Length: 317
Image 1 (cartoon, rainbow, N blue to C red):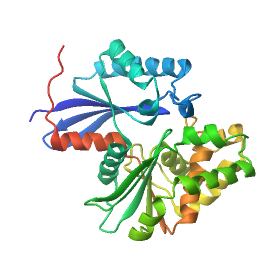
Image 2 (image 1 turned 45 degrees about the horizontal axis):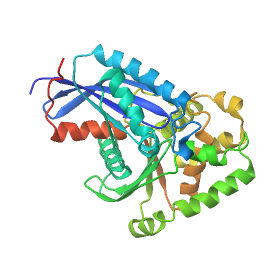
Image 3 (image 1 turned 135 degrees about the vertical axis):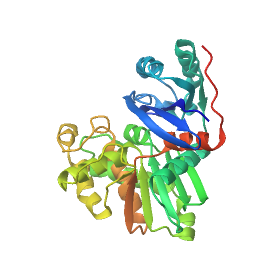
């Protein structure tokens, strides 16, 4: 098989991700990545609606994405949409507008398939081993949990408790108030109750986190420990014990103060307190000994699945 260029689009709740890769035989090499801060769920996610402002941010990002794709010899575009779009009453209309504007057709995937792709991505980045681990991907709209080892998935589930949803529901003060934190914990107790029996059954001792929250936590961790960061490293440095002092800063500082933390991503500064509280809940409620971070997730998992199963065909002019 000759070299083929493919573009992967992950239209998430907070961020649109573009990945362009070269595929040769059964291997791929990523040659371009870019994130677009669209905040598609802002102002409407819990009302199941994409607001006019978010809609326009999304369309603007898609125009830039199309220009970038056009600068590469891309033979196939695979675009998928997740929580915000799949739950929005006007989500299908938004995707129709994207196709009309750019010709890019997007498939809405359910949480079950999203979790599966996340697993494929993490497995590309980290050698999981034979013992079960818990993989956790915090998105803006949903959070996926997968119990798996290197060979197989034992259990997976998507929960509609993403950072944007939690922010809208519980971030009433900045910094987040003790009352907000208590309300959030009570909410998580109910929402994540299905996790309890499966974690008791499989007893994973390692939590592997992926997506932007964990990359930002890793960046903060590296900055304060003088660890050299390698761009696009598959496994990102993070440590369970180091998480707790970082978490304390995130939930006790306001936005301006959080933004001043070395390593903080401006794209994550609003909602990272909610994401950190979710991670804190998991680490304190369940018996995890280790915390790891993966920079590979949904989009890399989709790419892996394509390389394994799908023949690339030339795009029509």
